[in-house]
Amino acid sequence: MPTAMIEKRIGETLLVGYSLAGEETVIAAPELNVCFDIGKAPREVISIDHLCLSHGHPDHAAGLHYYFTQRWFINNSTGTAYVPEYLLRPIQDLMEVWTRIEGRRTEARLVVARPGEDIPTRRDLVLRPFEVNHGVYSLGYSVVEVRHKLKPEFAEKTGPQLVELKKRGIAIENRLEVPLIAYCGDTATGDFLDLDHVRNARVLLMECTFFDEEHSDRARAGKHVHVRDLPQIMSRVRSPHVVLFHVTRRTPIHFARKLLHEVLSPADRERTTFLMDRPPRKRFHDEQNQSEG
Ligand SMILES: [Zn+2]
Image 1 (cartoon, rainbow, N blue to C red):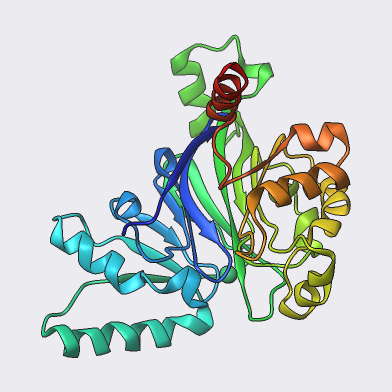
Image 2: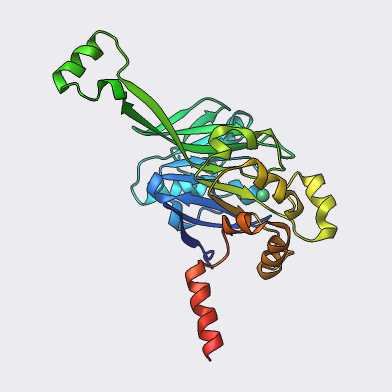
């Protein structure tokens, strides 16, 4: 059975994804042509050209070969996976083993992602990898829009005058960065939360795996976020939208929602949602229907 992918618009950003800890995590922003982790490669994300892999745990990475082979199958271009350096060789080996199993070579473009080194994906977009804090080396990724704005002192100049200034090597534009999304993969809290492109991201995708009080030790041992960590995380970030994902299967979503409500201030509650929660309007609609009948 295909996974029940969630599709919702958070602020201006459309997200399509599915995430349960240990089972599968794949979250795409189709309008930005970027996918974070690949889960089991659900069909909804196959046509997305840029795939950011956080780490090698199978719930995040198992669909990698399938992603590339399906793209070939539907005549898409090869597609690119950005991966932490230590995964490059094993993934190349994996592709090689599949060549032997399948009897056909699937093309895969693999690019090493390094913290702080921007990767351009579109004229106005870069991916910015950053190191997070997980049991194995793991990367998060920000999608940053880069805008160039004419400096105010040149606002009155004509087109030809601006060309002339440029020719003389004068910088006539300011560079403006807008972090659209920051995806933190699997992680405990860490210094990465203080990076400008993370804490100011318009949409911050933050894992929150554990909710039960007795799961605190699990969270520490596995380097995951526990709901009790959230107030501190929220105080460090300014994102208008924080989307929580990677909730454990041990905790039903209504219980997670209740605990989240207890720990967060009303203002922080307002900017926090669960990826796997149904869109607010539908829930509201359902509740209306229930109360009416
Ligand atoms: Zn995971």
